[in-house]
Length: 220
Ligand code: ADP
Image 1: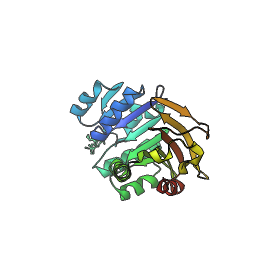
Image 2: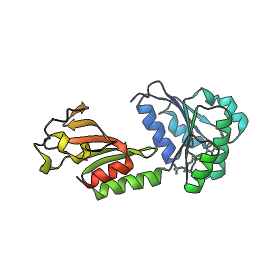
Image 3: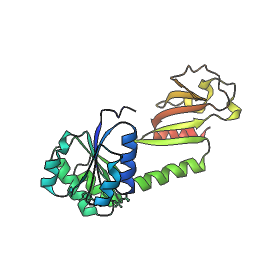
Image 4: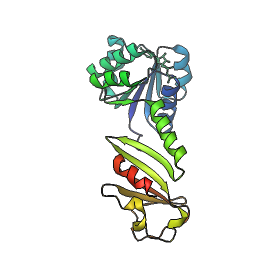
């Protein structure tokens, strides 16, 4: 992951914000963790570059923090919708490059889009949708929505396809979908030759419009 040089500010250290801090830190990003709750800031301090107690819904505080130097600021304030909206507005006005915000529900999300949030995430909803897809179809190993109607799917090759060339697999027959890679054991083969014969345990990584992917996935 190319997170080494990224500078990310995470505002709100609930379960989501804290998990985000840990993961970003593990992948080499420079992380500034902020919360109004001193205990949570102390808890985050060992896992981030810097941890600060601050109220980001106050304009002067945000300008002192110089968050416009950061690549992304994530507003991970959960239940307090007022604080989330105010913080988002202040961050946008202070010139932060990318403001990502966690939304509680679709009304909250709608307001956030209107006031210029660069990306709105609804972790519970998105995770529920993803888990349901995996639960209902064991042939789909992972499914990741990329936004703008695009997605990536990891598809397990069925035994009935063994020995056939990749070109015979329904997932390789889409008009706008692309076979990004073939995963064979620990090996990843990018853009594999369509004549490659499929083997037991092969996984295809395909990307494209969700509308076409859902049709192709029904044919496997
Ligand atoms: P989760 O659902 O991910 O656990 P929570 O709603 O529990 O999220 O956590 C949100 C966090 O955001 C809390 O720790 C809270 O103290 C923090 N928070 C709320 N308002 C502000 C603010 N104005 N500035 C900074 N942090 C805030």
